[in-house]
Image (cartoon, rainbow, N blue to C red; front, side, top):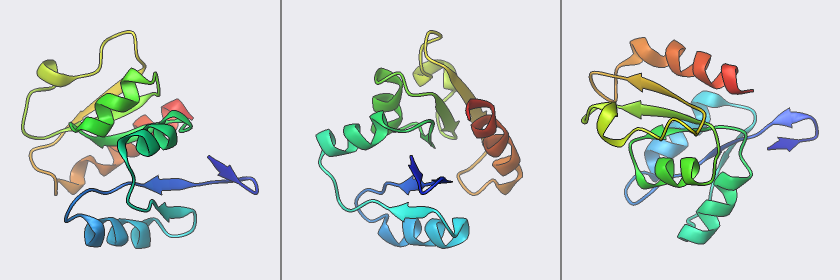
Length: 116
């Protein structure tokens, strides 16, 4: 999404994740928008209008590839071969040892740039 010529980074969050999402928004700075609590149809509408989706192996990531939105999928617990998006959908896989593996942040950023 673009607001007045600037990219907007929408940050979705689920139960017990609001504080984490707020920290992510602060880290991103200008252009970060925390989504309000959403229903599944509302979340699907936000995702459908996105240029790229970044997220873990979660329901919203699968929703994004079903909507044919390019996906940067972050895998930590399961091998990507189990739940990765199908080949027909543009995607990049970033595997991490743990969700706090900061050494992979540049891999995620590079994958996003490839889709923009």
